[in-house]
Image 1 (cartoon, rainbow, N blue to C red):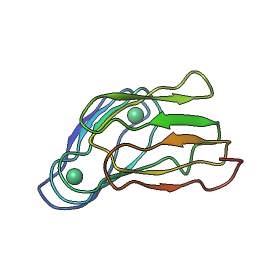
Image 2: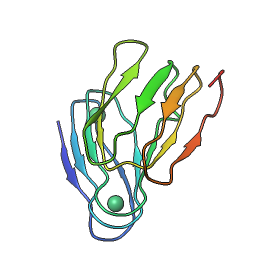
Image 3: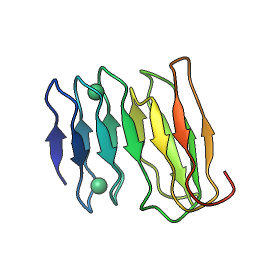
Length: 111
Ligand SMILES: [Ca+2]
Ligand SMILES: [Ca+2]
């Protein structure tokens, strides 16, 4: 398990194969998804979680500063907070936005 913290500037962060806590802080950050059940807090800014390496179907409903659960293949579940944008994987993904300006990139699959 890793505890990863970002700076007040935009950057790209990633976790490990284990369950991680990733706190991105300020700036427009990109968090690359990794294995394990990760807790990801984008902090201030417009933050993106990138699931493009994920092959299963993802279901993500963003809820702003409330914790939202990511369901992948009915099993995998990260926790997302303060995330505005999602890049999907190759599976059939399902995304629901929140009150912020959201950008979803579906990638492959029937999203
Ligand atoms: Ca941020
Ligand atoms: Ca991880």
